[in-house]
Length: 184
Image 1 (spheres, rainbow, N blue to C red):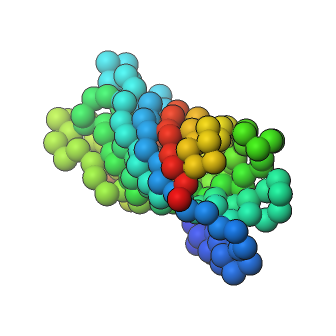
Image 2 (image 1 turned 30 degrees about the vertical axis):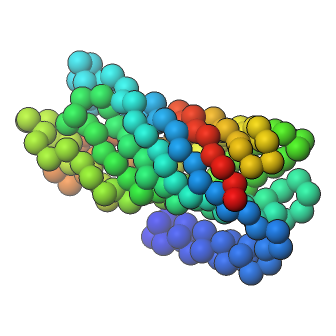
């Protein structure tokens, strides 16, 4: 039920913004994820973080001079370094962006993820991943030029990503993401 309400709210916000957008800009971004699955149930020897990639597209719709809405569509590799705890997602973050100045901004928002890949041979570890992952993301950004930008984000998983029908194991994603991008 929570997922349906969240999805409907996101679609309504996105529809409102798109219909009233004036000077929309579009772009691409690429970067690195430093991620892990936070869980008391994962053995200590499997807790090392994973270095992965993030690549995606974005649109920015100004509300006024200081605020804008920035939805994105991205591929993101998350999980732990051990291959049995790796999982990749297609993600849809939607940020409320506040411009501190022409150069710096902060952004926060929800993020929905759809699992597109997980390691199949779990070698005795019961770590089957849920199809959906929901997270809260916050970040800071810097406009290097009119078109080039960089940002640093922290993502905090709010849903259990480990399928709890098969086991009592629970875990949430955590990641730090550093990326650069170009606005068209």
